Image 1 (spheres, rainbow, N blue to C red):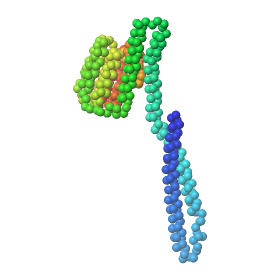
Image 2 (cartoon, one colour):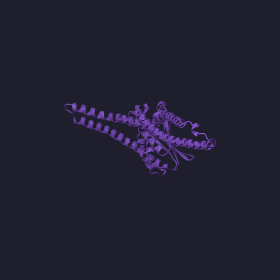
Image 3 (tube, one colour):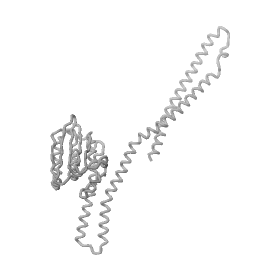
Image 4 (tube, one colour):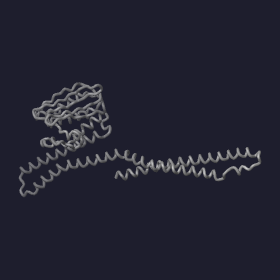
Length: 332
């Protein structure tokens, strides 16, 4: 599809360039032939003035084919010049068309991958629901207790679908350019405190202590988006942290920026997974083995979008079975 589009775009580039080039050539030809004719008339007049005193005829000194030959040479030169422009424009036009279409191609490829991944993730709970119901309907004498179990399991699958839908909506919201452009002066300590109060119940279930070392620092940002960022990072730290462990959230001033780091002492991330953890729907092998942890691999993608929205940077340092540290650098 994009190869055909590239050729069409190249053809349009060539058409525009050649129309301009031929138009200029026509103007140049017209101007030059007019100048040649004017020059010939001027020279003829000068020769007549010089030869009048000698009684000679000027026509004997002027080649009648010289003017036409000069015009023909000019026309040939312009023809070859336009041919060269056509060839060079074709090469550069094809190259430029590729550069022009490349962002669109990347966007379409990304969209196709997103649709494929989302369909796969949605299909899993739907298949589970369908199979459970089909098995139940095949039973000749289903019992009330079995019906309750089926309903309970179905509600669990529906909850997963609802969670996936909410994550997709959040991701779509943060992917919209200037989707959250209502920035204001916010205090990251206040946002961190509010976020910790939200995730504390989950931390208490695993007996994880959250150590808050975020200092008061005001930055320009979207309060809702930054809160979502802190939720994602702390939620991941608790999910993949060890029971009876600890999580640290620390802020550090670095010139005109502030760094917020979230550290855990959990399962960590393997080296081969490090370059993919911010990809949508990507879950590291170690994360997949923790079957009690629900998730679709969208949280860190959302976090990255929020950081980029605030013109910041997010990175990670991790060692397997030692824990991970996510660092967010935001401009003040």
